Length: 96
Image (cartoon, rainbow, N blue to C red; front, side, top):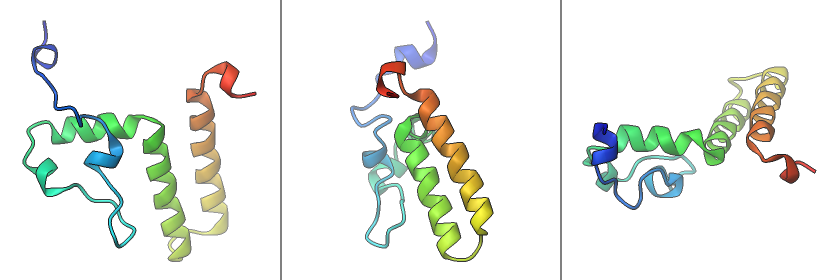
């Protein structure tokens, strides 16, 4: 049995809205309670693997475009890639 299976994760493990919530300034940051957790890196990686992680990446693309750090075509290309990844993760019956 591996160490990860022996270890009991907290209930908030991998929940993106708990471990990486949107702040008042419309930016995401980890709460202070999460910073002290020994599972913080693994937890955040697990949370970002899901569909919500793609939404976070899309938020970053939108922020970069609105601030002028990204051109229209770069934004379009990155959003198209993110939407393709999102559709790949959906079950076949949900795509219809």
